[in-house]
Length: 173
Image (cartoon, rainbow, N blue to C red; front, top):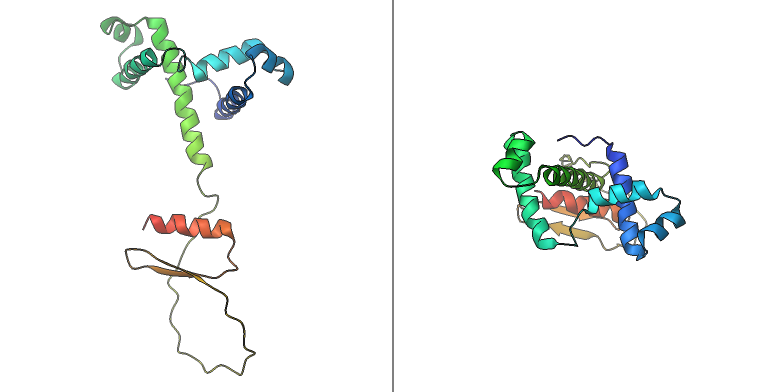
């Protein structure tokens, strides 16, 4: 089933629902304070949060049935009849799970590194006799060695963001 709203819209409402839950406010008061149409809010709230908290056991059962339907390829009315499920509830669950799938995909996309880092093997050079240089104080480098034998030495000038990206890259080797 295709959700008839954009990813950006789903993400907007997801973030709004998270802020609402954290606020501890009543829905109407939250909408009034943030100038949100109450009808739109309750509609999206139902689609995103559904009945997760009100009846967790039934929600777990319903979710399994809805996922089974989503992968079955059967017409909804036939599936509902064959499985003893109310057709309207099945539709609501599929919409809810569609929203959750979009939110989960967007969460993963937002946690991807913004830029990829490419590493190349640097050729080795013969050591050249250095011209007399001023003695520099050696700073502590970070040395990372992973089980496949790859060794990386990172200088202290590397930003923490780049260091995190290096570590994330190395964990996949």
